[in-house]
Length: 76
Length: 333
Image (cartoon, rainbow over all chains, first blue to last red; front, side):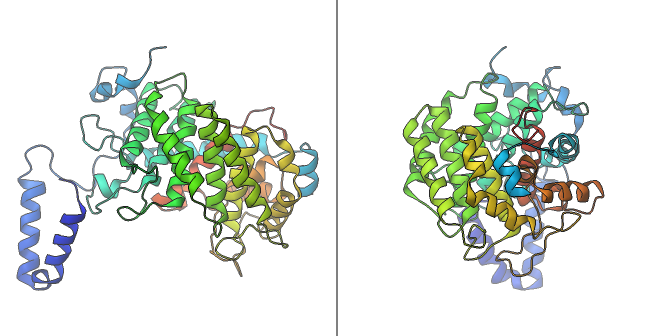
């Protein structure tokens, strides 16, 4: 779930009202962890992940994950 | 000496020495740049290089300037350099194309893009990212189908012709370069002429002291960026006389006085306080400041892309790659 303008406004609205209180901040954190990390069905959110790895350079040749990106490339 | 080098366009140039140094530094920086991008083709944000948006999900809009990463990948794909692991790797084309597609997806109907907030219509982001997009397509013209870019680039060119930023020279220089690059890509002479017009007005705006105005004053880093754009646009339109143009020579001389022995900038009295230097114009023109910058980079005391934050490092790395990609038969070599 990406951030949108409406979501950002709602989040900040909560942050400066109920989020000012310790219980409000803890509640929000619990909710966010459940939504994006422990309860994420597809790919859990890990801020420190998904950096570049040199093995990705060879993925296209071996038909790896990035092969789907080849649609736009012309054969030469 | 700068003026002489500019006027005669030959002489001892640091280009030969610069190529492996700047190319090597840019190549070393590239894993960081690639890490900024969403490289998962199954992702809805595939090709987005604003990690704060697509990965951290902290912002409601993606900064279009991060999409200039596509040009860095195109340049790395082509850079003839022994220790370049990215050269000829097809995946680099895919990622560059994905970056361009993402830029198109973020473009407003009027042709502009945003940098910081929704519906911003940023002149800076539209100028630089339009140039980077068109340049990527030009450089990888034979490697991929770019026909989908015709309408978005024409739209961006129309917006850039209808808007100008006279207070900020570097953005104006980027707009001129963008219009010329897009015009040549679209084979539209009117757009190329519009770019040349912006460039002429920029040259006319130079102060008597020799700086191009950045919010009312001169600035070292932005002056080097402006000159880089001017040199590139001159190379595109084959108007080398512009490089011997009095105002360009004066601008290089102004810069030369403010760059220390190891490429450090004396920012006292400058309008923006930038500390970095775009090397392309300095190296291309054989300016002593370029040699001093290279000395500083060799000694690891001058600011390189690795020193900057994500936002500013991409543009500087692109300039390093462009400098390293200059042909051997460049006028200065």
